[in-house]
Image (cartoon, rainbow, N blue to C red; front, side, top):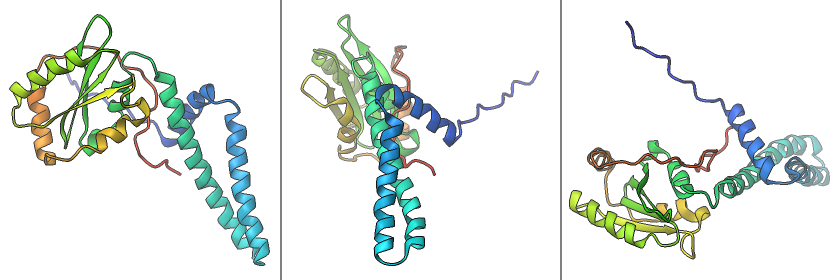
Length: 221
């Protein structure tokens, strides 16, 4: 009997946009009005310049395109803040943000490699900087120290970094930036090999908050 299955289709960009808009609208009051105002102000400014230069039609066409781009950029920033706000304070929020970093760019996240009764958590992110241990909770230091020792014994030649999220350390909104600032130490092929080795370590099953998270990609038009 054939076991071939039809792969699930990726949502189209307009479906993703509708989903993101619906979630953002719950977090942001008068979202539609704010976006409309951004569009109209941008369009009116460029159109006014066109009238001043005696070329309203070309500048009007230009204004439509620029206004759409500015509104899309503005919406992306609002959606990013709303996405972070929707998961802030939830267990596994840092893993959700790290998990949004695309695998096609060499980032691989393993949520909840260590957890204690006080809901301190350590997640592992693998990329060109090496191993990044991402900790969240009030006092995750002991868990991080334990995981550093485990990973140092298992892959002794790989750099290990620590990032603490919240409680006066790195804010959830700045987590991806902090990760990307780490120095690159591995080639892409070495990252893949490292990921395979680490797959042999024990894993925990831990749910992470769902929802659209910023990936650094430009929105499709």
